[in-house]
Length: 185
Image (cartoon, rainbow, N blue to C red; front, side):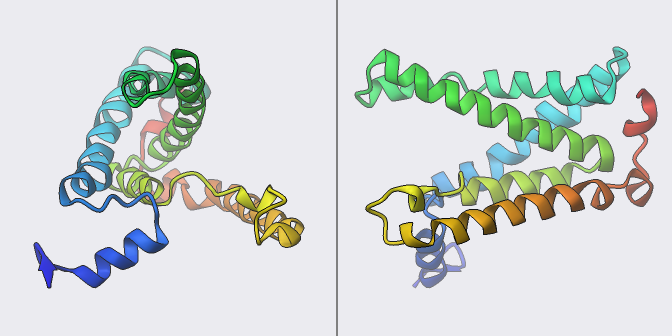
């Protein structure tokens, strides 16, 4: 069987291996297409040129711009309270969300300033929505991967190091002919 041309087997595969992939068509459309493109358009493609034209440096734009993105996710506190969490617990969750969405927004702003491409940051956003936060359950003693925690942790650190080392050259503005990076420094 198919759902809008997508085989059910593919949906089952995505849901099994990427737990953040919603099962309903509407949620997948929202989380994996509409929200990433809309958020990147608003919070990067529109905001970066405004902040840069206001005279902010690249560093200030990378730090300040994502705070708007993080704050835009604060409304989730209401959802958490409606789902039975105490106000205190909802605020803790939302504060953590503010931290990682602001960090992610900084990464996205950096890539956008360096490449000038909305498509690249939208694809990164879609991919991250599909993956979610890295699982760290292997650090719990009861987890079957606990005995491999050093190896898994080392693999995480190597992945982060490789990403950091490759990010700057992979986003070279000369490759993408981006003028945003050179506006102010």
